[in-house]
Amino acid sequence: MDLILATALCFACSSAADDRTVPEFLLEARNGSRHSLYAERPGRRATALAFVEPGEGESAKCSAAIERVVGDGRTQLHDVTWLAISATGGGAPADSDVIKTLARAGVPLLLDPDLIVATGAGVETSGTVLLLDSDFREVFRGPGAAIIEVATDGAAAGVGAFDAALAALRRGTPGAPVEIACSGAVLRDLARPRSVTFFRDVAPIVWRHCAVCHRPGQPGPMPLLRCEDVSGWAAAIAEVTAAGRMPPWFASPRHGRFANERRLTETEKRTLALFAVGGARPGDPKDAPAEPTFTAGGWRIAEPDVVLEIPKRQSIPAEGVLPYRFTLLDPGFAEDQWIQAVDCQPTAPEATHHVLVYVVPAGRDPREALLDPNDAQRIRTLGGWAPGAGVFDLPDGEAILVPKHSKLYFELHYAPNGTATSDRTRIALRRSRAPVKHPVTRDALIKYDISIAPNQPDATFVATRRFDEPRRLIGFTPHMHLRGRSMRFELERSGERRVLLDVPRYDFDWQLTYAPLQPIETLPGDQLVLTATYDNSRGNPRNPAPDQAVEWGDQSWEEMMIGHFEWYDPTAPPPDAAAPGGH
Image (cartoon, rainbow, N blue to C red; front, side, top):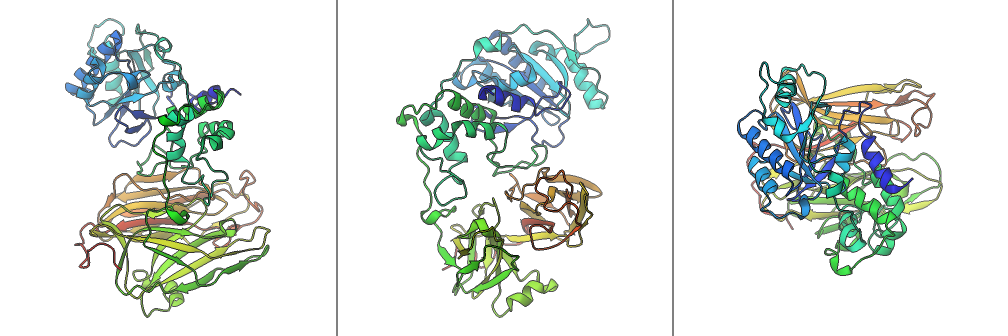
């Protein structure tokens, strides 16, 4: 299949069966910010999309109409989200009438040079406005000038249709979709075909999104640093990015916004497809941005202060079921350490199920501490590794305390893969460079009593944690095994639930952490609700034994239900030893 057509189909087919539903998209604005159609916006009842082109007459009228209705309060931004989309806006001068008008209205201008969104939504002319309900189904399509018309009794057919459609949405009684002919310029006549080269167009994408894994010593199966690297894989890269399989990211865009989101914009996907079908031309190296730099030693955090490895190399046989192994390491910390970033790496990741590293206070027996249910506040997780997991890297002012004279206790779970090997897991720590304001705790919500019947496709379990004190939640990591299908974190307050993270397609090979764009505030009495669903049917291609019942267990063919999360107490004063780092 033509790769350009494939990317268009992947975008269009992401919509529901109803062809009036606009598919999810992610685009970049003129100022570099990224905007998702489905991104959660509290209180939103409707979304309005305006297709405008700077310097075009109908687009100027449309932008002026948007400024007017936003200004007069009929489409206040608290319940209607306005997004303007342009094929040519990226190259337009800042003093263009359309750009200035939208800026005054506070409406972002998103760049879609390849008309991906317009094509997916069936929009052909500039100056067109779509009004979408909360499920992103179209309820109005018409010229921008029509949005300022007020619906009145006795008005001519179509007059005030946008106003009437919006009022119906606010009442919760939307009617049949309304369409009014638009007379703007043909968008395909305005859009310019793009010529894509590696150094100017592709390098910024792969260096930003791919190189962290696709470089020597990292889990990516091939490096993607040089033009020759990328050119040889251009068709495959275009295919997996168009389908959304790479970069890996599994959070539903409908719930939560995340600081570490990995998704590509529609334009970035199309750029990779154009590179593949256009002969993978290198272009001029002078057009490239600065090449990425990485920390020596293969670490994924910048400038580690402490690098440690487990005391003895661990032998891993080719076959068999291995119990957890534990090893104790004294890091020699004579003072409290405030750790801001952690990177844990097994040297045999292909035969490692996971690694967890605990902080054990001085004088405590680590095995007793791990098994003591009343000691949860004293032994904490510092870091770890699992397939596809990233690093733990906190913003300035936040850090994990490792008390002086503490020891590090490594939990090592190996999974033989047919080839005998050995491992000597290592860990890198970076101390806080700034005064610590918020000591962070790595925590987990766990449900042990799970039991999944044979051939059950949708076994669902729920676990809760009540907060008796204020908390700020700053990260979530789902953990299940091969039958895990989905996991959802919710905050329940006064009987109402708000979705914090929804992972509808869990993947054991990519155990990602999702960091909210803004911390989640909790109040005393709130509950964190964790819901997990498992597929023990033959329809799950990774299911090792659908005819067997499954319960909690350490091995991958057994199951777990763990919702890791990080938090800090916003009311607690800064620690006494709030100076950066430690020694």
